[in-house]
Length: 104
Image: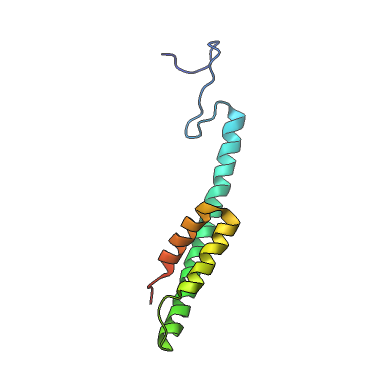
């Protein structure tokens, strides 16, 4: 069992926390992960904003004597996500709809 220092063994060393076997690849992965972390933060913020807007809609619908959930609208949302992202988009839309229901 070698130390992985690459001292002539011909084996590449996996860079910690990236799975990369070269410094260059580790740098690209680290940078890309930083971008993903930024995108995730923005996505979470947008989901929270969507939840707030959904609460306004539900409050108005209920206040006017309507139901909390509009199933035909939810089907439109599901179809939109499926059309843009394929089958996994449906699961994503279901999660979003679940997060946005019943917050009033």
